[in-house]
Length: 231
Image: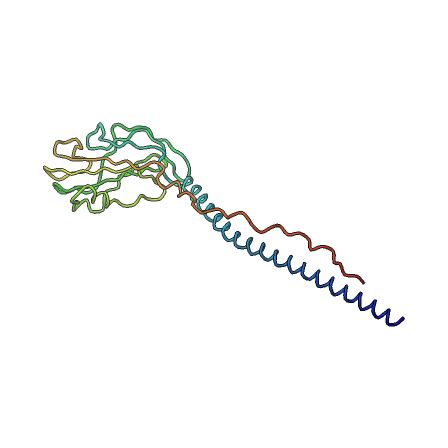
């Protein structure tokens, strides 16, 4: 009788060990699958973070640009009806995100600053403030003059804070020194040109080109199941 009981106990123990082994194999499979899924989610998270960061940069660029200083439309610079002056058409602009309107000024604003030597080029930027006041900003070396209109334009200082650059004028006089505010811009010996600043310049950031994360390929995990071991 004892032998029978021992055989039964041995059989039950064998069944228990097989059940535990089977459960451990299922658990290992589940853990391995969970690890695969976790690793893929981790990799995808890194890619997704890059996408989100790039979108954030683009969004902040739009917000920063739209809350900044820029032209909405061209200032249409030209010779004024007062001939030493630079006229403008009606245009809109933003300063610190607030929109302003500037009426057309046919008479124009007089150029100012140093005389430009005969046959040399000078340049003058026109910058506008929120109150509509237009400031003439001469190129830094107008007193010595430049050898070309391009070089003169390159000598213009950057636009000051809380102002918008409408554009600039370049001029040279082949017969005498060019006296800003005095020499008529339509004089037969004067060569002048007007360059309008580009509306919305610098407002929009580059498009977001980052690729989106791929779809997750690891299958969703299910419960391991109820253990099959017995007491």
